[in-house]
Image 1: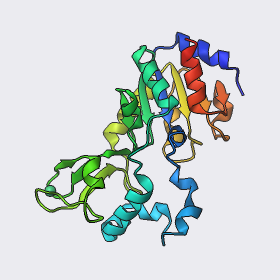
Image 2 (image 1 turned 90 degrees about the vertical axis):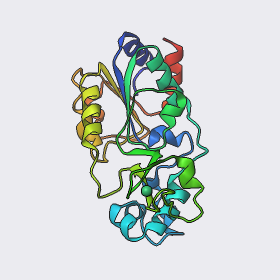
Image 3 (image 1 turned 90 degrees about the horizontal axis):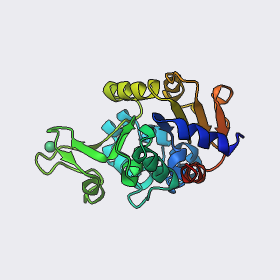
Image 4 (image 1 turned 60 degrees about the vertical axis):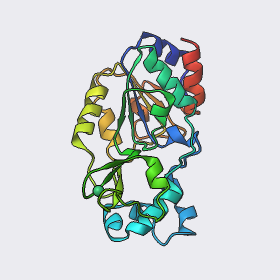
Length: 243
Ligand code: ZN
């Protein structure tokens, strides 16, 4: 594990940090990574989470999709943790230019981050498949039936999140790659970099200053400048405190 002082020095001189975050960024807010939870789900659900969160399942088993989605994907009471707050503070100090996240929970914005690029969409954005009307998370949570229906036209309201079998939004992908390629420091947190397209994306960083914060090994360990295997929130909180 790298020395903490090295990260403090790196952040001190940086002004275009990009944070690339995975599920591990939100586990400290008690939002579990559903990929590591198959055992739990199999007790209650007939299908693995990857199936229930797929586009074909949404289209053919819409009610079952929403039952699972509301039960296991939505965490409406989750609060930002120290990692989210430290990153918002770095942005406020003019050191961080963007957060690129694979999470859909909206906790970075709740912590005060302004420039958040959500690769997989957000549970806070929902729209009617028929007329396009927008709805917030509260509308989905309070729908009487499992499947929320548009109050204007009766169409199915779906979350604006990327389901399995669906492609990423290319405009969002382009913004993320631009931010990463212009970054002076790239901090990668809470992802083992095995889920597409994370590993390929961080190669767009040009400056040779990649920092990994992850509790397990990643495919990128050899190429990182600094590597930490502790709590993202604890580490970033201490680093911001020493600037
Ligand atoms: Zn509608």
